[in-house]
Length: 263
Ligand code: NAD
Image (cartoon, rainbow, N blue to C red; front, side, top):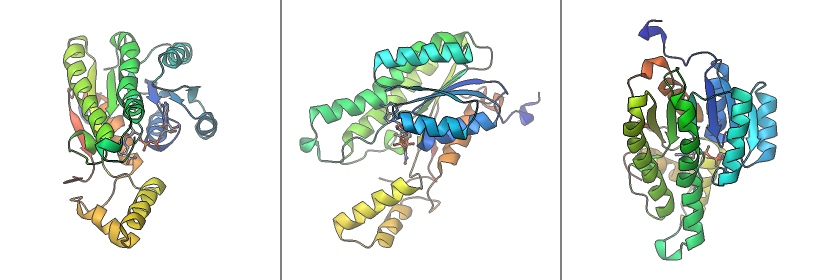
């Protein structure tokens, strides 16, 4: 196949998406499934999983907390049974963590954010690597970081710390696994439009006594393109990174954020 015709992943690619039942993970699962990949997702929310597998026939799923080692073992048992191997790991699980000044953040809030956002990526990568090394389909890991993985983020210190940690893990694994043909990249989404962002804007507007539309303007003013991104924009980048066209892209932190200039 010519490199110019290779912007989609190969059909039949075996893909695992963590926290794939809703949000960005579900958009990624849908995009891969529609491109002809075989997709397995895991998620902590069983009801959201039920909805996803109904909407995307052929996609298989496990209920699991991505930060709990025995749950991760069960996910890989299901992956081995359902997919028989793995070509792409999308390490997507992540939570916002607390929004507070450092002296008001509890150790348990800090630890939970590290567990879900960073430790889960270790637990999944550790188990995926032997399978990826056995793949002959330009295997890769796509790690979900954030704009908070390249900029500081006041009052969101646990979140920003974990998202910078994801970059360190990605860059180190790219060097470690490159000789075996396994690529590792990170996607850094910016402000993703949708109900959740509407809620964040409304809450911040109420808290500061500013009109909601004025607050939305404040958010957009930080973005060079003056618009938010969609979950599908992020999914399209994950597809590209898993396609033959990206066969020489590894160790990269790729922003999908319209160029968010500051947080
Ligand atoms: P989300 O809050 O919509 O959650 C997506 C899914 O994660 C849900 O189905 C939820 O049940 C699942 N989940 C939560 N905790 C889990 C756990 N411990 N184990 C397994 N599943 C769990 O998330 P999102 O906004 O789609 O974000 C996905 C990733 O993208 C995260 O890593 C996030 O940090 C990152 N990100 C999101 C944005 C954004 O604006 N939405 C921006 C930058 C980065």
